[in-house]
Image 1 (cartoon, helix red, strand yellow):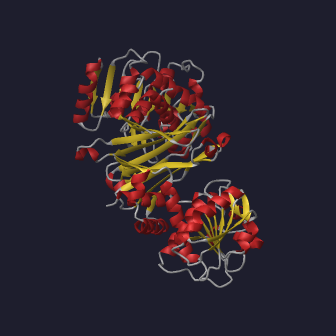
Image 2 (spheres, helix red, strand yellow):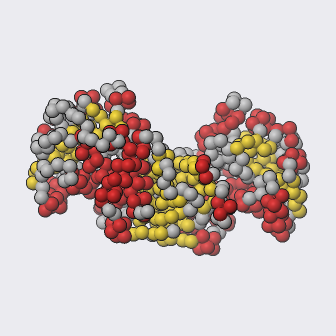
Image 3 (tube, helix red, strand yellow):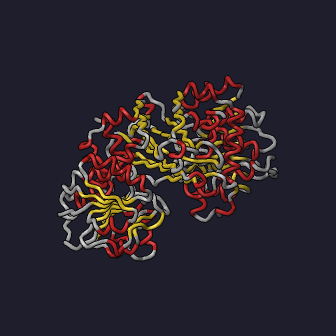
Length: 312
Length: 312
C-alpha cells in the first residue's frame, strides 16, 4: 500500500487533469454511472467538531475511494488547522488497499474549488463587474483563485465576521492581482457584486434576497451538512435557475434543503451540475436572471481527484 | 500518524481486553451512547466483490473509527484471500488521523467471533450435546474456536458445499481438541446439534425450520448485507427469543429482515444483544426453547477493538 504525504500529493496534482477528472465525475454521477454512498456525518457538538465520510466508485474505474474529512472549529485556538482528512484508495478488482493519501484535507478543498470553477464557467454572467466573497477562510480564497480562469474581473468585495480575517484575506489574495475591498457587513458585498461565492460554516442565512441584483450568479459552498445555511430561502424561490451537485443530497441537507422543506422550491426544479456540464457549453442566461449553484460536495469528486493523484 | 501492520496488530491484541471492549460497545450501543453511522455498502457484482464502510464513535472516547472491509469472492482463484480491510482511527478531540490499522480484515473477523462468543455465553443451552457449524471458512473456524470458552462440548458437526472445504476445516480444528464429523448435507448437522453457528455468504436459506430440535440456540453470522440469508424465515417465527446486535440494522438487512418484511416477525419482538449483556447474567431459557442471535456486525465493535489495539 502506497502512503503519500501532503507534499507528495501537492507535487503530483496536475490542475488541468484534476479539473477534467472532477468534471467527468459530475457527468458520470448525473448519468447514474457512479456508486455513491450516503455520507456518514459525525457531529461532536461539545467541541465544535464534525467529520464526513464520503465514498464512491465510478463505473469501470479500477479504484474506489473512501474519503474522511474533518472540521474541528476550535482547533485554531490550540494552534491546529480546523480541517484535516485523508483518502483511502481501494482496488475495485480485488478489494485490496492501494494507497493512503494523507492530504490533510487539501484534496477536499481543491475538489470543492474546482466544482465552484466548473459551475461559474457555466453560469456566471457574461460580464462580471465585481466578485463578492462571503467568508475569508481557505475555501473562500481557493474559490477566488479558481475564478481567475473564468473571468477577467479582478474587483473583489469580501465579508468576514472579524477584521483580522479580512486583513489576512486581503494580504493573501491582493498579491495575486485582485483589488479587494473588505466589509464588516455582508449587504454591500452582495449589492456591489454580480458573481458571489459563499464559503462559510454558517447555520443562519447571511445573504438576504433583497440585496441580490438582477443578473447575479451565486455559488453556495458552505452548506454541506444538516443545519448549515448561508442563503435566505426566498433567494432560492426568486432564482430563475437553481443548480445542485446532487438533487438527492442537496434536497436532504444542502443549501436548498430549507427551501425544499418549506415548499418554496420543488425538488423537480433543481438541475444537476453534471447534466449541464455534459452539454459542454455555457448555460444560456438572460441579463436579469438570478442563478444559484448549491454545492454539498460529492464523493465522486473525491474519488476522481484521488484517482487522478495515483495516475494511470 | 501511526501505521500498524497486521503482525503488529496481532501481537498487540489482548483477547480478554478485546472481549471486554466489544461487550462494552454493545452495551453502549443499546444505551444509545454511540454515534453509529449507516453502513456504506459497495457491490461489485461483475467480479463477486463487496465492501462495507462502518464508522462509529462511543461517547467520551478520544477516538472515532472508520473501518473498511472487503470481500472479493473470486480472489482465491487468483491466489489472493477473499477478505481484506483496514481501520482508520481518528481523534474525536481534534479530527486528526491517529492511526492506520492495516489488519487486512483480521480485526473484523475477530470482533465478529467475539460477538458470537458473547451471545453464546448468554444464550447457549446449559448442556450442549454437539456444536453444529454451517460453513467452513475463516469465520466458521473462529466462531468454533471462540466457543471453547463457552462450553466444554467438543463434539462438532460441520457442513460445507465442497468436501475439500470440510477436509481443510477438520485439519485445522481437530488438533484443537474437537471431534469433528463432516457432512455434505446441512440437515444432519442441524438435527444433531443444539448449538448451531451459521457463517456463510449465502443468499438462500440453508437451515430449515423443521430440522431444528427444541432447546437449540442458533447464531447466524453470515447475513450482513441486503440479500444475504442463511435461515428459513419460519425458524425465526418459531423461535421463542430472537436477539439482534442492532434492531435497526437487522430489520433493514440482517437475517431477520426477511421475516420482518413478510410479517412473520415483528420488529418490536427483537431484543438487542447489548441490552441482554447489560444484565451481566445468562439469559434464562426453558429446555425446549429455540433461540436465535442475528449478527449483522456493528461499527461500534470495530471502534472498540481498534481503540483496544491502540491502548490507553
